[in-house]
Length: 118
Image (tube, rainbow, N blue to C red; front, top):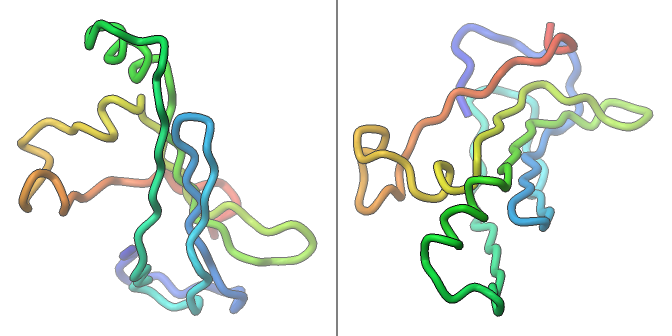
């Protein structure tokens, strides 16, 4: 994660939380200095036993929201610095113009800065 020219006033570590398809995972913590490097994979698996038509799966993915949050471990409960929300279909299967790697493995997203990120 990059944020050119920004220094974090709080020095507590940060992590990225990800919610997709009703599942929540988070990365390991990293030091509070940009750029932030998260060198891990978060794996989400879900079985849709009742879905037969692929169109129904697309509809379900469009109704779900993928949420990413950049969180700093500032006491007492942590501070959300930035968020990204998008329907899960668009998040998992972005338009080709948004990707620069093989099958969308490399992609840039713009997170929305929270009001507490000063």
